[in-house]
Length: 406
Image 1: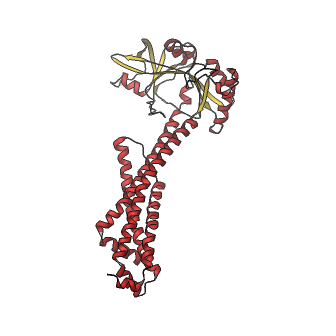
Image 2: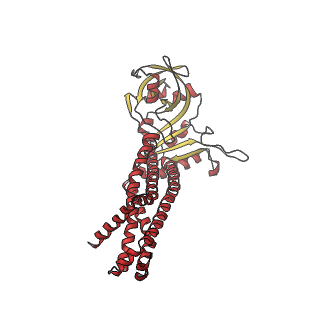
């Protein structure tokens, strides 16, 4: 009952100076809203990265043609040298723990269907490519082993390419398109994948047998990459190590610094991007916390003014029997009430801002119950920390001197 009475008196004091109380809470409102929005941005970014990684496929390991650095030679980036062969891919497919593998050859070219013209990426793989990537065919069928062996001119269209080449809604399956002026028969259309981990449109692609891309589009005998699917998630790193050892043996590489290939897992790529998102979130959180600090200083300032204004009231309360802890509790409750009410308003504003960022700018945001709890706890902590000194000052007043105060 005593606590309820203290809270009632605290809110009565807050309502007595509505404008001043509102301005005091403004700093806390902005601070909490900023914290909520920044956490939502960071959580949304991480969730988006996880979704994009999942869309790449299951337990994937990428073996790419990498750079070569010898004595006095410059070191290029991944894909700067074509060092992988189909024999390498077949050897990788025999490594223990590898469930499926697909050689990959990339090219880019102009695609024509009727009066529609589009430039897109053409990617070659084998019959396991779609299984590795968890990619579903919405209509038609996958290419067969025979079509791979004979380098048949057949292809599957990504959704973006299909809609661009056939805007009238016609079924692309069975149609003939021209890629680099060569006729290709469309045998399937892929289900939409959406945005990739690097922000690319995964549906802006044409898939064909890797032998066809090698011989008839790219004019090469090497491959760009080998996509590997490990049998289980818990052995991905072990399989990656075995593949690295195998490739060094096959390419007669003694010094790891002279690797002419690279082996990367999706977990490594995800970890790098997640760490970047986490760092950015912490930076933004630090900036947002400044607003909470300013709000806390505002609460302390107003509570000190309130103590000065109500010195006679404090003296009167002490004279009729109020104890030191009663005065301390009263003023501390007022400070915490200002902070908590401001925190609740800030949470509502932060959620609204997060939703606006998603709707207006398309930024991924994710407001979690933990972020709301953290923001609310911060608001209460600010009230306690910055309200304690004014409350202690009020409780330490001499009753006689307080009654004399004018």
